[in-house]
Length: 192
Image (tube, rainbow, N blue to C red; front, side, top):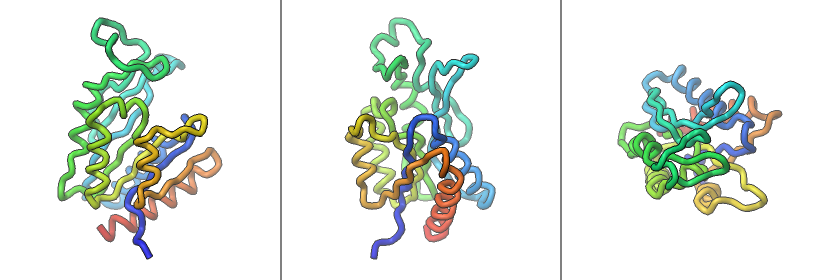
């Protein structure tokens, strides 16, 4: 029988609370184990009033950089890829996120929120994710739910990885899934 999965993937529709769940699990683990060495980042919305105008990347120690914006203009942004109304700032993303995915021997857990279309415009991002996956360090990551039955190839590769456990989040199961993931990670970290 195989051991427990070391790659925990949270998926679900946009706005269901994947990033919130990941941050609450992270905060709970840090509270119960202050010496825990965690690397990674999460994404959060940038709002102007009630309108979402973009996304930013935040490292677990609080450093922030832009990921995408609907309000960006200028000559440099014309070459940036688009996801819907958002222009993706690949250079900014790579400058902050890629160092967080460098495998170090003392790391207990990686958090990657998220492995999605915007992040995957970086040609260096998915190879870095694969290195983390091969490192024997537990991972908690979020991935988008397939749209129209089609998955992003890199996301499908993660989803089908033999060490992946996938949790599909909904409004009705968020609390139960959060507790289950926190328990599973607690067990993994004690064995790690």
